[in-house]
Image (cartoon, rainbow, N blue to C red; front, side):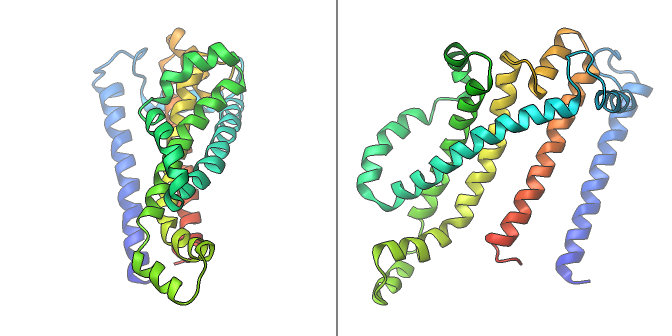
Length: 261
């Protein structure tokens, strides 16, 4: 086994042990020491039982857990893809073409400090509680980090590399696609990763305020019914989704950014 694989194996073992320690501390505090009442903080066994039940049960919010996950996933991906498709090319154009930066930068600087959650009431007023309002919130959450990282990546392109490309007769467009964008890929990819995480945060916040299905809606309904076990199931589900997304991004990054190494 290579040194790299040994290091990765040790990291996985440490990660697994940290999860086990967390579950053990949670169990001792709730089931043994009873530091909090069961209706406000149930023990992990109760939460696991609720998780298994929720996989097929529509109680108490009218949908099973997979249905909630699918509804949230559809909306998250719709807004995320729109934000990436617009944000990444726009960020690259801002970083490469000076007149695009002069036109777009003032508007971008004005919109950037606005938290996406602040737009939730406006979007619900305009589009209701359907998919349109949530997709717009996720789009706004996604497009900002996509633009920022793409712009920063292009701006950090080595001038020496560009000078070498020009010396060999590369056109402006060739310099962009053969030098600037490849060198900016790590920054662009980091922006895509951040945008994905932010998009789920915005989605859950939107579903907490107005929705008929989704993980945020499930958590909100459970809160109103004082079902702490369902609330924790929703939170843990978001954590599992985050782990899966992180693993997917790691695989894509290894394939396209690190050259398969």
